[in-house]
Image (cartoon, rainbow, N blue to C red):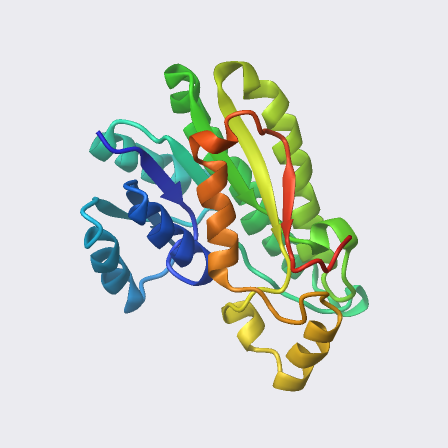
Length: 244
């Protein structure tokens, strides 16, 4: 029987690459999404070409009941969840002086509370199985901060604290919980930036380039494998050396 991986926000960018990477490793994939888009069925077909199953589960991670529902769907289909990748996230960037209260709250609800909502609904199944891997996608701005991103940085810093605390709670059950802190990765979020801004960002990265989604997916592949069986509670920066 294949192992089963649930990836939230899994239809684009980093989440999409993680789903494809784990499918190539023989994982059945449960792909969470919030809104319908034309890429969904195409991605499902690409995953299933790897001779694994793919279940699409709709749900807004910021709503606990929706998370409860789609986790039940996955359990009904596969009977287990071996790997959880909390990847769903949004940005609403602006300086704090201009930031609306709802923009602060919404980013925390999706990024941080969403991580709690999904993990809370998955963890009991992992504890019964006495094994599991959880990878939470944070950000380097959760470590360094970034002007114009008080909401996003706060949510991603919260994910790091959540990761370390949960890792201590469940390590004795052979459930490993780690976090990845990507730097500037080429995704929909960074594509909205002007080319000159991206070039300026690259100048401040020792490797002189933005990362690719595969750079993050490769670390996820390692963290959910047996090669990482003595690693938990860690934050791995995937940032080309930006923060040292």
